[in-house]
Image 1 (cartoon, rainbow, N blue to C red):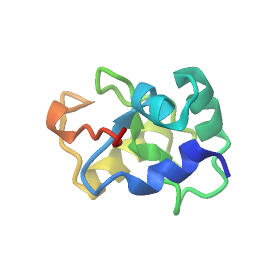
Image 2: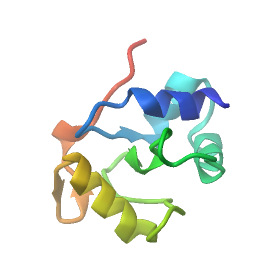
Image 3: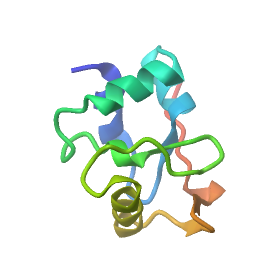
Length: 96
């Protein structure tokens, strides 16, 4: 399993990461991270719904329900949204 998918397991409840942050921690590019997430074999143990655009927009979710499903999962997880975007306090940064 790719490191980017394994890192998703470390995102705390109520937090999200950006594609850029996930890519940095996994040693790849944001576009590559997006392609890896699109092929996520296990949505339960690798919560790819917790990855958002740098500006907090909800993007790129091909799981059940599409972006509406992603929004529901984030809200259920306790991620704060305002005007359809994740609020800055909800962003997580992986340790160096």
